[in-house]
Length: 323
Ligand code: SAM
Image 1 (tube, rainbow, N blue to C red):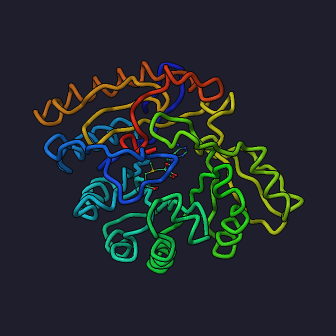
Image 2: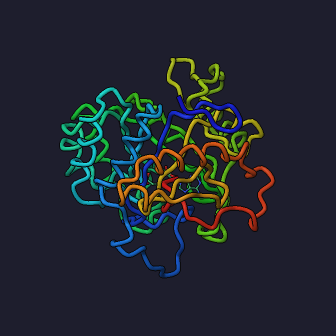
């Protein structure tokens, strides 16, 4: 079992397989041209897998593949199969923008993937286009249908932004409710790469919008393994809100993040990280275990999004760390 320096059990590893993305979401990516990390700096699937094995052996029970857009990395199904074949009872999940799902959902399912989280910020074609800076909605919706058809369990992520998609939240909720997908509204986390004017809705503002249509919903007792606070509508459908600005948000944090370049990151908010690249490339598995333990020892107690000081917030982009 892995325990961090604040006594929290850590059993969840998020692995970003690429920082590249085929969307340019306003809350995540810069508008100005920027350059990607050269491919030779990325860890191969074999090297990423070496660290995943170490983590599983040490107590990780849930692995989520993310990015950038993870489906842009070739042969992702083979990587998923490597993890599945190593330990098939791992909770193996993927976070994606859904655009490539129509082509690959079946392959991912066959490889052993169990669950996906798909980002869906609006059901209005123009708004979705404005957020992603690309005409994406129809393809993402077919991706969701295909993922559902092949039997992947689906959750939807939506980042409510002031003046952009705040008028679309009820539509997203209803779309998900009709299909039985839990939707989680994620409070926008301020960062150095988002569009300067980007402003998110907080949890109270999101709840006020939901209550325009659903008067009576109640908080469900918090499952500490999930970052979301869930709420139940009268008909039993549950939606969640992820509130990183809330003071006790990090109390039960159970996660660490690995980037495609091999940086192991204990907290999304802070810059601190250690590289496992040399350890895995040189097959120094004991060194990888030591780095894992050091990162856990030094995992910060809590983020500072509530009092955010942009000088202190990590300059690393969410498309590198995987969000
Ligand atoms: N490309 C994939 C996708 O779109 O889901 C995976 C990577 S994305 C960085 C992972 C998650 O982070 C998405 O649900 C996205 O909405 C969320 N995210 C990105 N930037 C964010 C921000 N500034 N605040 C809150 N959530 C953010």
